[in-house]
Image (cartoon, rainbow, N blue to C red; front, side):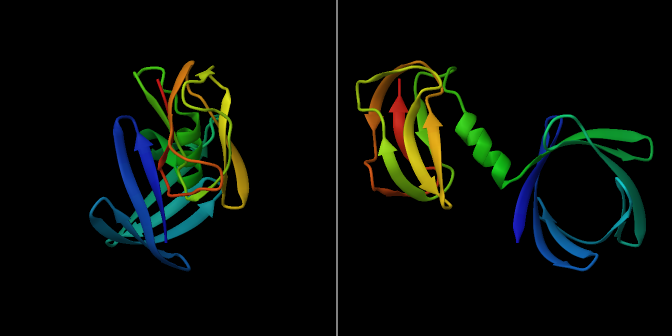
Length: 170
């Protein structure tokens, strides 16, 4: 159905929703399947039934997007939810400043609308280098660093796969 990634500290877990019917939900957490009964009791308070046990969790949004504080009994966990949209935005904002080369790619299939640079061109950080149409939207992809275009791997009108390298910077 849908998958998200939960991050808390150095720990990261992928959660996939396999089935949902009313309050009953089946999820895949890592390699293990869980059958839960999930009910929103009141604002920010959730009751989870699993294996005959009840867990009451308070989930409070923080000032940062997709970040929450989850409280269970006397424990508190800072949690970040990484969904498809968040992964898309992280990919667009990636910077190659810490490496020799930077590869610009699109996280989803699409079509190249316009290539704004050629091999050998000098680019500055934040400069738009390519425009891609994906999911009926045009997105501008910017250089993550100041440098030179090493290679342009696509041309206008090309149909691309998800995460396919489009432009290599050095």
